[in-house]
Length: 502
Ligand code: GLN
Ligand code: ZN
Image (cartoon, rainbow, N blue to C red; front, side, top):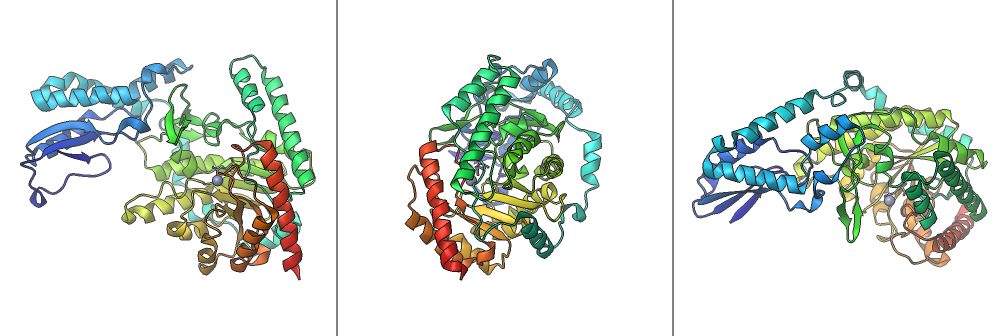
């Protein structure tokens, strides 16, 4: 038997294969997304498969069902219209199995035998296409009118000069990637708030206390560019999905992320708009507590798409631009609130790279374009950072340059700065913060080890462009190890500064 993913791939040419002795298993129900199958399209594929005259034909999902949640019947959305719509539009694992059974009956007994199901699906798909929020003409127009100029900042040389003047940072500025430990108390407060046991005001007060303590800690440690710590975020994608129109969160839609970690991706079902600012009040509060610059912290379009279930009725390039526009407005609002440094995280940039090398160019173009759209609306003296992780950056070096972020922090501790010589060779002359502390391990890095990695980094990167920071966010770490590690990081940075300054 030969199983084929006919959602991502296609059938072989009739002339190139002899399937007469093969049981063909046709994966026509998509195992990677959560949308109800277009039965007409599936039937057309199965007809093509039959035309190859396999020994027998079976119907299947395109992959195993581990990437999708269990059952839509376990969900209930508060808005009754959205609830009715999503129940009709979606197919989780149980619904996909039912679709496979329906299609298999059609293969055996003829398509007429499933005409009722086919007709019902046609109606649902037509209703979905016309439903409010799926297409927002004003937004479509805004996206259609975008030009290259909307994605282009001033020359880096000018930005660099103005930002150095405004921020007045020491050599090898120290910073972190955004999150501080998500303690049990923070999670408990959020759970109590969700259950209505903690009022909005009390929850906000709890988060402000947390922010204040994270700012105090960073001042005490001697870090240069501070963060507010992301205590208020359940997850770096879901937090934004919950505030943007066009997304729906699930209550029980768990899927495996890696190992024993699970995540509940949000469903991106409609055109994305930002009804209100999402992060500005927290950033403004954090900045009011310190004279050091506090980084605004956002998640980029590619990562929001990669860690959600995106719609299947619009090219991802357009979805990314819609999210890019929403973020662009947020970045501008942060700037107007006095935030001088804004980081737009794209840890999933490498993850979404298609397996098929022929499709790399197309993907990287929209990925980079949407980031630039999100970040190019600011003044030249506002510093844009980005953060990338999950290593193996070789294939996306051009894209990293293309992002044109003023500062890029990058996972590099485990690979011992592997990516830096390549980056330097490509002529990268913007700021770069290669992570020197591997936060995925619970080990506290010693001053010696951090000094060594920083010195190694300084061999490839011009000193004036080099930053000192951990590998990734600290939300999975505990406070004791975080404090100790950051203290060592600041100490190592001082040593390297003193060694290299003269
Ligand atoms: N700003 C995020 C954090 O610090 C980045 C996380 C990530 O790269 N996955 O948690
Ligand atoms: Zn990271």
